[in-house]
Image 1: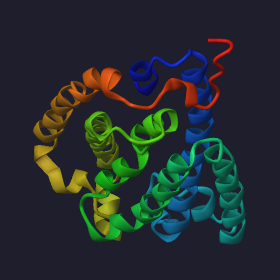
Image 2: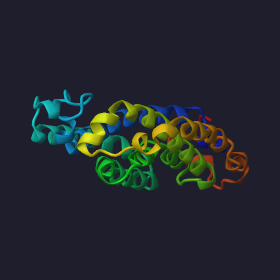
Image 3: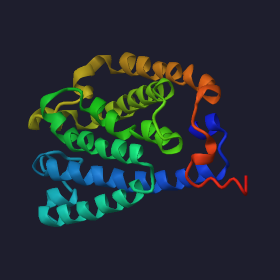
Image 4: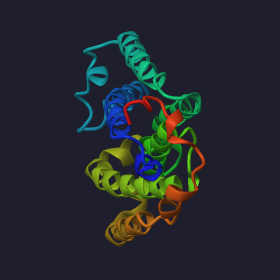
Length: 222
């Protein structure tokens, strides 16, 4: 969207699509590693997760920590290709990623925290291209992504309800209970509202950043 709003050359969105694709793959993996490290003992008591490598004892916590270091190093390598605003914004997402597994123990809304982490790219994508976040555009997109995460991860969590009650894991599946269908239907409907952000229609004409200062732009070519 930022590339559209700023009329950037096609090379700009293609470059960032590549970077964000690789970054998402690496950091989603890092998030899974952190989650499995936090939940090693809980996973042993849940039918769906008892065969995860850490829970089963196939690898040690030290080995998992080393693997996490490799993943985070790869993520940092991608992140440093962006501007400083985006580097700081991207690095700040680690706090949300790290606390997500703990949220299962203290709140029935861990899926909301997961949504905060999984949809950080809605903020980072714009800042990578434009140098800063356009909140009028990105916040509705971010909110819509969080709603979508609540929908699919609540459905996903229903398969673990029996084990979750036994081991003390909390989730929106347990919170919503018999009201899951109407609540998730309402959240799904809200996605259409978030897609009609008024900011995108004005950003094209109001953004003050000249395209010539964007990374990768060469005025002799375009």
